[in-house]
Length: 278
Image 1 (cartoon, helix red, strand yellow):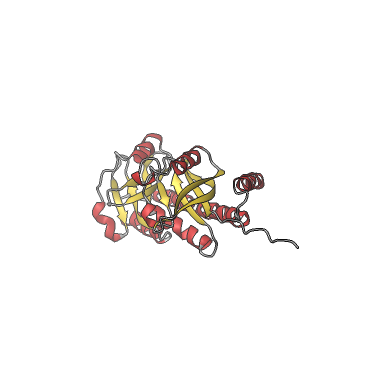
Image 2 (image 1 turned 60 degrees about the vertical axis):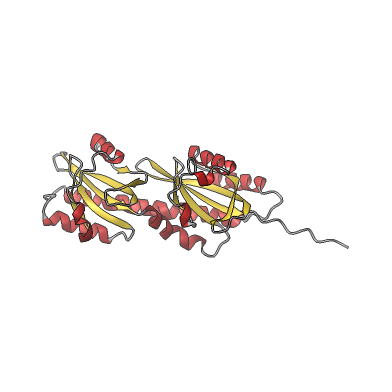
């Protein structure tokens, strides 16, 4: 199935790029590597949360044993804000690392993903939101059950989504003529090589309003899991406002039903003129 998708997207890119030098051989492997890299991170988070939830199920969630388990979880992932234990009322009762303990006791039950967790008692992966810790972040939550299947609360990993993404993306693109950015289905830019665009929404931010083909492209990306297309925008984000055409392909990564769209793009390069034959 993967090969079929790649062939279809390559065909689309070749069609839209006719007459230009589009490095399909570079773009598609970069997209695949980005998808595999972020999927691997998501898988690692899922496995760690499952393991920790099981460990916490057999200890007192307010005692030192639970805190030590959280410390070890935090040490496994460098892009975390904090790890927490959330009780059945939606309060954070234990938080690590030590610098974040001041937020213990915070009621986060009004956060959308926490309400979903408490209602359905299933793992959740939030969209970007403004946390009580004061940062725009994403949150991974995994329910904790006792041996008798009693719901005890959840373990949380609060993550810097742009740091997680950069950790995967930067090594992929540092020596190739492509860029990769990531967006939520609601148009919010999770990661972009131009930090000035991270956190902006393609569907509502005034910056993007003059670029209706970019908005249209992004809406198509939001509605479909994979594909290819083109749009006009600044050459290097807000640092270089030369207007250029960009060719792009995208794919999807997901966890607990939440999806991120990964977009690889390349600036149009005019094909060199054909050599004259004598």
